[in-house]
Length: 593
Image 1 (cartoon, rainbow, N blue to C red):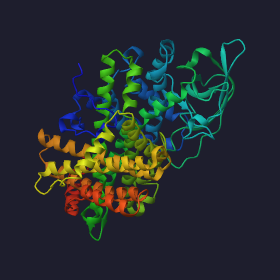
Image 2 (cartoon, rainbow, N blue to C red):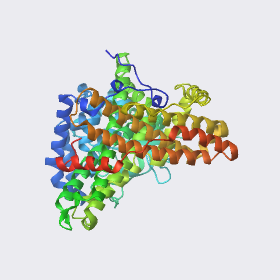
Image 3 (cartoon, helix red, strand yellow):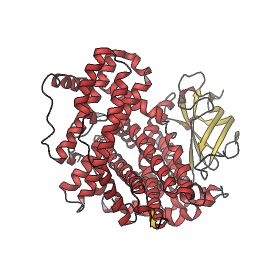
Image 4 (cartoon, helix red, strand yellow):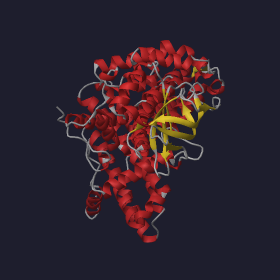
């Protein structure tokens, strides 16, 4: 029975959250950790020895490894048991994704198969379609790909030109068109293809078997990174698709694509955590081995600064992704208990957290980019050599800021979704903003006598107040035209992302201390201190830039005065905090936070 007071998507901006309200990674149970360890072991024993061969596209290697994963049940973790899967929870699946995420291009192929390759069918397929294909996908007998992007349709997916025309006898749709950047395209057996039926304005989706006549493809794309993943252009020339292979309803394709992107975004947030672990462990290992001026690199403050910031990025990403994942799982479970079918419960549960999914995709991908960039720097000249692991980490990371919608698109989604939820009264954004305005007429809160966690919560609350003031003021100023003020929306998105990540990390560390789960809690407070200072500096910058984009003169000065009340903070000795964080990483010789 679900008894949790359910969190609504986007509600973090207007709601005070307690440590007991969130899930933290330290609360994974034994079974969940065992599944994750199985995934880790598979990566290290079956995949890692072939990293180089995968990058060279050794014939048949990637599909062979995927099929091995299928034989072990790893492709069916999220698939219900009645369809030959393991039937594990959303949160368990996210933890497994983290483990696979350290496997470079293999993780891309794995996620494409288990995510965008399998989930449209699992969530939207009818019983006949699911019975026919899902067991094959869950066991690895068949492999899957997702065909959405076209040469003229990237972020604007609905601009696609691929056409489907019903045959005269009404038994087939005749498919014609071109798709590009198709992951797993070179070996997939089942393709989810998006096309417009006749002259429809919106897309429909089709289940297409790659063996059918009329399907051809270009050679493998030569890519900057994730070289081991198969990426092809696929052409459809009068391909006959049985009418029973229409996925969902006619015209539902865009909605299917949109909802699958929500899933992909939060899953990418978990996947990059695995890549971060590998990169941080390699970075600290090398810093301890490499000597300069008679001492290991890890002895130098400049290197410790880099190592500590890597830890802060990783720890804060973990905190945020698993907080959101459990909130999503709670809604999925509640809808399932209320009688919603499996697919519908998952679609609605994940779509509910659209802003969180988008912001975590951005934060996770950019945190990984920071980590691998500093990894190259720590390796120095060797970091620029393809013989060292920094090379593959650096190249493979870059795609994550483009996958599942570019980070620019996702930032706009974060800000736009949050504001629309306020306008539709799904969250009380405008009501809370009015309370903040009334508060400014009185005396500002005194932060001088607050305890450690009380002060951090006050900072989080003040960032939220800053956002409420700015977002509602901008809406008053621009109205519907705010949609086109993308630079301002990105300012808001960066602040929303910062406050969600800071609050998630704060709540995790506070919960660790309350439950006595860590004896060395002081170093976790160091992580929180560094993150808080980084975030407060970011918020000061973003808030001033945003308001200066639409206010002038006395009105601008007055708003700056108000924001000063909410963005002022007491600096800490971040240098010493970083040294202690790096010290633990170095002592442990790996990330063990």
